[in-house]
Image (cartoon, rainbow, N blue to C red; front, side, top):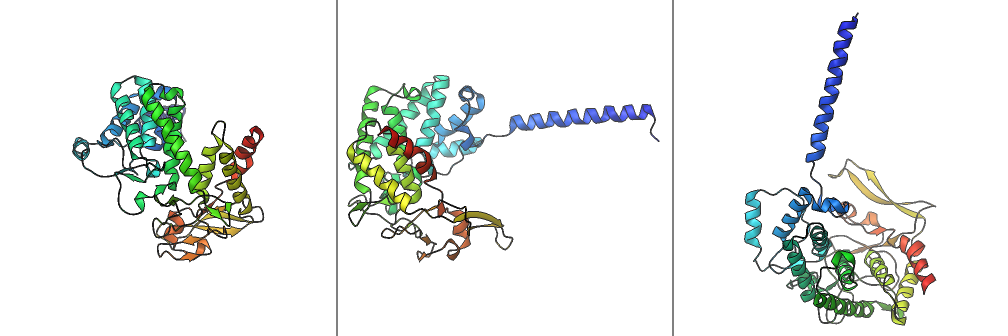
Length: 366
């Protein structure tokens, strides 16, 4: 049996061990790298921190000489000296940078926060170079290609896919309207930003798809010349896009003093969403050890499920379509390959908030 002296020693050891564990946990917590996604949503004070500036310097290294950025890069990673040298050497290469997958406009929003927190000119200058890139990349018709300088292929389409063009327009609108975060932008660029979003609005209205004389919604990308719905990758066929169109309508809802044409565009799109929602189904993830990923995404019947909309919908019927890498239209998510089911979101509640909250609030005002 343990005596009191031994018990006290055990308690001391236990307390010491707990303290050591807590210290190690604290050190690990402090050294844990923040992700690029997390870096976009920090308290105002954080943007003057050493970690924020380290990431901002990464952003500058990844910026190409044309002012833009490439996509799908975690700019919060710690870079070695060799990696930094490689990025400096690549800056002048004539490769197209992009607005796809949040690229360029996301980096610019981050740099504006850094500049406002620090007042360091290098971040302001990089921001302005990026704005100039976006202004230069815009087509005369008002649309933006996915890549600029132009890459041959579907990259030259007017691109709504993954919020590309709307992400740019939201940023330029904030600049034009002199939001506090962008008060440092000069008057000339603010005027240019206003002209760009005015042109962008015109092409949004021109590309809204008509079926049997009625306005519906938009394709994920449109031909830059005739504005028709256009094909991108094998599984991205000309169609009506639930996800991208919801984002476009959300942008239109924020416009001050909308014209009758804008109001009609909004109401027509909302009506399409109302008419083509899928009820009685829901999307679920299941564990499935037969697949490399160990999981699968399926659609199941559920009396309380919905509303859902297809990422891609048949232009004439509005019915969701599911297309794998073979480019063949299927009627159900289960009919396409598992790799696409897991890697691409074909059906979701894209317009639920729009119909329940944002559009009713807008309609009350107009």
